[in-house]
Image 1 (cartoon, helix red, strand yellow):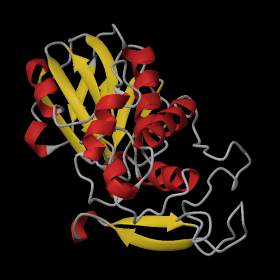
Image 2 (cartoon, rainbow, N blue to C red):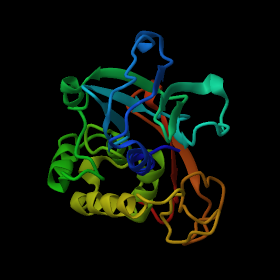
Image 3 (cartoon, one colour):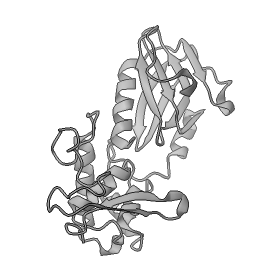
Length: 259
């Protein structure tokens, strides 16, 4: 599931391959931007901001969001793709690499000057060079009645956490996901743990929150409904929470270890 660490790693790998190279092909397969052709332009940088990925090419920014199913792949020219061609939304080639964005939830091309404006609503980036824990705490505390799992996943508060991280954070802090922000003790500790967890996973292809890399043992509660809690043996429960029906997210918790 794409979260901030997934996007960070994708951006780092894309930047390593494309930084400073000239595009020999630019194929944007989204109707609104299908006529955009940045062939001949130089890739300045590929970077992430929370769950957003930006490719700065010439005087433009190719802005994408993976949503649930999206991914960026790198291939050597002439090698087969691992996903069907009809799923490709962007194809960017240089003399040495082909970058393909598959099933991107959002893809747009904007002038570089507009990039900051598009992402201005985001809270502090957990994996960004300007990470500001105090500002993240301030934003969370500004809405004390919101369930903590919803508040942590709100990218306006802090950018980068998805459903897996917010559920795991609630377990590790011993807090029910339904508890309101105002009832959660020591918000700075919650934010600090969020930063440590995602930072530890920033270079991993598989996310680990338990400290155990063995397949099937990486998570405490996420996706484990009906299975025994790794600490107390009680069955993990599952529910749904969100600001409205369109934003409902699955929640997982141990009824004994979390209160």
